[in-house]
Image (cartoon, rainbow, N blue to C red):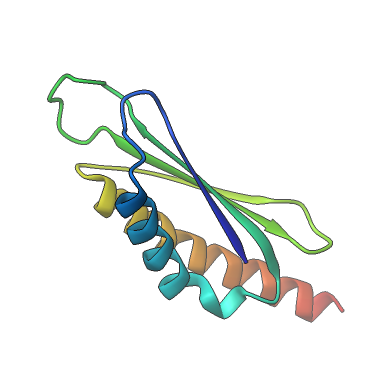
Length: 105
């Protein structure tokens, strides 16, 4: 599974940050390596430089073999919380989606 991390203009996508979030996502979603070809990650700070609480957004888009992409979105107080919550949400969503596909086969 290829993981591609994108940031908006308010978040500096350092090598360390990208490496950290790649590791977090691999740890959470490696079970789906065979079904997911690419995971696109979009990180944004919804309020820019303003200190406005829960404004760190993470959108995960999982590209599945032979199926439409699956997208989940979370907003939290920190990027780490947002990425972790999105990974957990994606895990559950993929599990349900792939189970439905197995039952229909």
